[in-house]
Length: 342
Image (cartoon, rainbow, N blue to C red):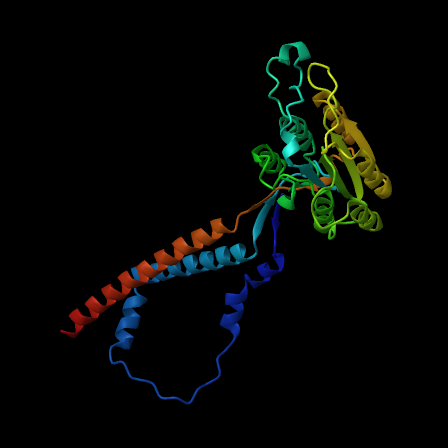
């Protein structure tokens, strides 16, 4: 559908006619007398000159029309189309502590017997595969990414560009942020980034395989602040208590603090999940899809194509033609006037 951005500017079309009706006030000023002015005037109004003058006048009117059309901002507006949209703002906080290099996972779809002689698939590898797929499925949400270890770092601000967010996750390496685990700082940074977002849509998904051993913020205090702001926090305790061959692992000093992660989720009205394998981590994120479904086809978009440059370009071409014609006719009149005077 064809529209004008500023249709009221079309009222300027008859302005040249109106200006012809306006008579200038008489001025008591002297003028320089040109002896051959009458002769030039007769030349300009004779035969071919009269026809040329009409042509110039037509070009001037066409230029004025095109300029007014360009100023009115002509638009071609397409039909409304639905665009995936959700009002949710999700900050993903992913643990990058040294323990995320523990090779106690197996790739999705691989049988344990096939993988037992090549157990170099780490927790971080599993996170990149599973969380990466989760990010791609959230194409209607605004997602942000926080990586944390000794400190928390904002890797990607809230954005609908899920491809870039996923790429930044895939490029993350354990050791970028240190060796410890600053869960409280990660929550504090996520809350800060969600502070200006609309209430009722703010979510934090925190994944960790350890306990809060670094940072200046207490995770429970951060959870209380989030609860007061209406921010839901989903926590995921990740890491296996068994190795890939099925034997029990001894308790480690960096064992995941399930009690704290569960308390964080309960305080904010979120949910706590325990994942000890890649398959369980995948199930957790499928549950998150159900808990926070996408609200598709909520936003209607009408494609708009601006067309002002077409009349503006044509007006420029006509202006150049008028200028060239005036130069040619002025030069011809001067030559004739000089011949007549001799």
